[in-house]
Structure formats: structure tokens, C-alpha cells
Image (cartoon, rainbow, N blue to C red):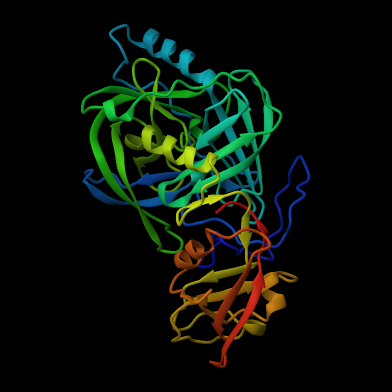
Length: 409
């Protein structure tokens, strides 16, 4: 599939929403999901290095109605303490009440997603990975501590560091996670990754292991678009971090959260990881969450609702098979190819059409879908942006586009 939903404002206009138990009341003019648009990350089983490439796979992002083709992870050796499984069970019992299962509906991808969240406040503020919720048109979370399910909204997110903050609606008196100090983590430390492995919900899974490296970097690649982004400063662990664990805690033997599980080693798409994983240091994740709480946006941090253009894009190719009336055409113009425009969207009203190539946004050059997404990060619904593009005849065009509301990127 060469066309993809990406954050900032595009999605397939002809894709019907999936069956759902609760009606969605959202504006159907948006651009969706950033480069980190799947539920969990997986990497090849090659030797771990200071930098390597991780193919993007789903934490649990499957077409609506499909079942995940893996079993949830179970307790993995080595044991947390000499007491063995009893100590692992005790650790899980201590940590689990401060966690939530996150379930998302990806209305414009006709799919669903699942991941894990860490409870930061009794009123339901949550920490998770951005890729767990990017592109979500509806988010619900189930608190492990009280068993209740709540709707959740996105407070803000940082795509470049894969961190997002959510707020549960109507929650109070929740048990919170015990936050540790990732600066105290050392090679060989015994740790455990806890989460919603396989997206099955209920009692969290726990995968015990050890810290195998510090300050690691991964290049996270989107296997659909070929775009990539680097996450660095990560904690590498020898533990079975599995799809669905994304956003969950990496904990020490005292049950303190020292990292946010974000990537796992393993095989191909929709396969569980087998022996290695990566986690964002909790000190870094908490610093970003505090920036989000303060309402301070930046080049990386987006606060509040996401503004979208209402188009689907991809990088131009010599013989792209999209255009008006399905005609074939080629493009030598550097920029981002408009593969589809949602009827009634701000972009359609501005004159943009399939086959046009966007070359600039607010005067800044656009040379890739990722660049367009980044330029839109600081914007919100209702903002007026100026888009410059080359139409299929090669003529330069530009117009103001007022962004619509869309899902997080």
C-alpha cells in the first residue's frame, strides 16, 4: 500500500469506518497519524548496536474484527529475585494497579489498536507512547486498579520522542505508578517489562530480564512509506517486550518505573518480540509530560487538538498512478504528492486536487510527508496556513487553508 495516513492532515477518503460499539462524533476531515503510526515497534534480530533500524510494526493494530496472531507473553526468566515466580507475581501485583489498557479505534484505517498506559495522577493523567494513540479517532482506557473503562483525550504529544499524555474523563481516586530514577539504572540491573501484551487486556503480562545497554539509539522506520526517525538515549533490555506492551512501564525490583517500553526485537509484522527491547528513560518521558502539562508547545511538542489539511499524500514517483479521473502522470517537482483530497475538506475548497505536488507550507519548503507533518505540528484546528503547490500542468498555485480537526499524529 503506497498511500498512508500521516499526521497533520490526510487520510483515505473512501475508507469506511470500522464497526464500533459507540458512535464517533468527530469531524470527518482530517489528516492522520505520523511516522510512528503503529501500535508497537519491532526490530530485526540482528545484533543490537548503538544505532540500528527498527521496522515499524503494530503494537496491536489490526483490521477491525481480526484477531491478533500471537499469544500474550508470560513470565520470562530470569526471575526478579531468588524467590522466583512468587517474587515476579508480587512485583506484578504491586505495579499493575497503576496501569491502564489503552484501546483505540483507527476509523480512517479501518482498524483497531491496543497498548498500555502509566497512571501519573489520581484524576487520570496517563503517560504512554505517541505511536500507541497516533491516528486514533476514539480512545478508551481500562484502569487495572478499579476495572473501570473511561474515555480518554489527548493532552499533547511529542512524535520525535514517542511520548504522549492522555487524560481519562471522569476518573478520580486512581492508584498511581511509583516513578523511579532512570539515571540510577545500570548495566546488569534486573528489570521487568509490564503491559498489555497481545492487546488481550485484563491482568498485565510481565517479562523479566536485565539491562543490557544504556544510551542506545534506534532509527524507527515506517515500512510503508520508507520514512524514518531516530529515538536516542534509550535503555536496552534483554526481556520479551511484546506488541501491546508499548507505553507500559519498565520497572526495577522495587516496582519503580524507570522506563517506558517502546520497541521490541523480534521478527516480522504482527510477531511478538523474543529477546530484546528498548525503553525511553522515565526521567526523559516525565520531563516531556511536564512540558505538555504546562501547555508549552515546541517544534516537537504538540498541545491539544490536531489540525489537519484533509488530504492523503505520498512522495512523488516518476510514474505515480494517481490523479484526476485516475489518469497516470509523472512528476519531477520536489515536494509531496497529493494522492487524494477529501470531499468538503479545507484543501478541496482551496483548489488542491489529486496529482498536485505541495512544495511549501507558510513559506517553508516541503520535500517529504514527514517534513509536512513536522511543519503542521505547531498548528491547531482553525489555524490559517498558506500552501504552495504545483498543479498537474506545472503551474504554481498557492492558497490559504484553514485547518480542520483531526486525530493525533
